[in-house]
Length: 280
Image (cartoon, rainbow, N blue to C red):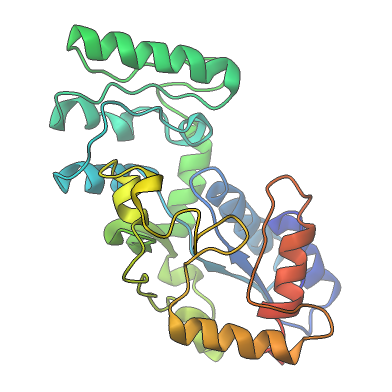
């Protein structure tokens, strides 16, 4: 297992070693999935047959719709992910002001655009006139990126996906279209990963819905901290302990620390010491 900067790096590995199967673990939202689709197109163009992807992509609009349809969301407005909207445009979010009386929304992505977006939401809420407005105008267009959507639709199709703390949301994931799925000889790669139940005491779903604030969860700041999250139930923790013991020369204990902005070093260590050993 190797950490790469982009799917094109994985494709380069496949090109250099045509006798070896190279599988790229593809994750992320609409921002990254077109890059994966573009890499598949490049593999097809170059005739690189030993490259495939294992996608666990998710999409934002179905998740927002599911949250609102649940009737449990206590949120007055949404600041939409501007980087996602650069691909999707604003049309997929047009349902927001139609199904709720309160959720003004405004794509933003940087500190410079988040503040105006917050002000936009406040003004719309006060006026009682919800709508989708673009605050990240330097890159977001109402139509999004037609080329990115085109290539994404060619290689991927919607599928159901599991969301931590919420459950399965229909149509909120992406799967490879059958024509581009891994060959039958690589059957294990054709299966979706199994759903993992959340710990009973975990209230992440309620926090995401705005029902409770993080401090209202009994695990927050106690058993659940940035360096020791309560995301694993007993069986998983036992499996993880076994893996850590096997690789005790490199990693010990039950805590996994991931740091945003660390250049991928901690994620690389996690993959090397915990995820990779079970695989030959």
